[in-house]
Amino acid sequence: MPKNNNLKKINDYIIAIFILLIIWEITSLWLNRPYFPGPWTALAAFGQELGKDLGQHLLVSTARVLVSLVTALLPAVLLGMVLGHVESLDRFAAPLIYLTYPVPKIIFLPLVVTLMGLGNLSKIFLIWIVVFFQILVTTRDASRQVSKSMVDSVLSLGACRRQIYYHVIFPACLPKILTALRISLGTAIAILFFSETVANTGGYGGIGYFVMEAWARLEWNDMFAGIIAMGIMGFVLYLFLDWLEKKICPWEFL
Image 1 (spheres, rainbow, N blue to C red):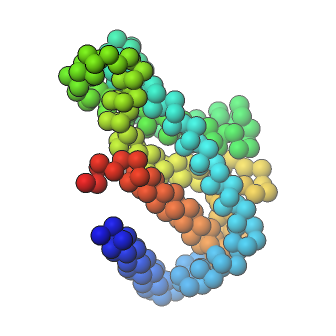
Image 2 (cartoon, rainbow, N blue to C red; image 1 turned 180 degrees about the vertical axis):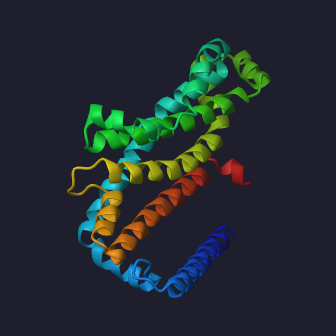
């Protein structure tokens, strides 16, 4: 049965890609402008450029996203679980979170670049702070929803506070943490693209730099090759998170 489900899912993705390509082709034919090439021309450019500079830009961008997600995950999850479980700490921290969370973090780009320069650190930090807050808020809310009676029953069996977090609160929060990660992924890629187009030193500056540099040269095929690369990067990372959730949260799919 799982094998049949996997084949069905693959077929669904193939159909979805086919529909997108048809819409793309129709739009290209309707506009009939060089700045909007058809899918086959763009895919051919993607194949050509991937073995050249685009492949290096793709690796740089992917590394920035992965480093940001991984380094933001642990502190955000730990802090979120504690705040959701310890009411006295949450009462102090909640106003700070409510004041800072809604502020669009990309607005700090000039300050971050001034302090950290145009290299990887400033881009990773911008993505990190966005992902951190999204995971923190989600984990905190999930931790607050853990039944107090469940915690008390485990405490009555002799569990320590560390075991409560590890065996009760963390498993209860895990599905929502992974959901927050998937949501954060889209935001992270958007922040990545913006930071790579605004703050860069050249060289292998990432896909955002590649796309904007191709646009400046009016190389429309290369520009769309970069767009395809960023789309594939996001899609693959999203599939990985989807696979990870099924592996570590199997009870969510029963």
